[in-house]
Picture 1: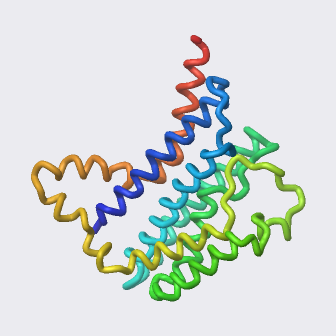
Picture 2: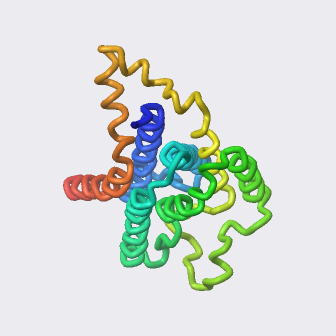
Length: 234
């Protein structure tokens, strides 16, 4: 059973992500001079996007596995994310070797699935640890590149996508706690979907959130392709 509220939250994250990457691509093709992704406002924009994604991951883990863990289903889904992350690392290494992605969003999601599954039956502990993990990151008690700097000395000084374990895994843990609440389990959008005039719009809005991984992988090649073609005629 799908939770419409969760799918809609993912859809919002996806729409914001596409907007963010489109702005980044406009800069890459020199259509604009915006300081994407590191300028004032753009970092906060990215934080809002990943916050939604990581909360949704924690909620998904809780809703799907808090009662019983289907290890086959879990392994297939986590494997898909991990293979996608590996493909992005390989592709970025050849495309932009000086800034290749060694631990981006998908790498983080795969690791968070593996670690987060241990907490799905302990939502209160998950919330407590979530705040601790976030505190460690926000207070900079550990370097942002922990633990990679301990094992590798040849990673790029700047990477096109990086997610620090601290504080972001804390957001996943908070999502696990949120997913255990009756308010979310009962799905606040379910009654709205029963309304004949709202059923189709809600279904359409939720659709991107149900295919988030595919959209994540495909949207950038499509955007870059469109802008490249446009650059040939402008």
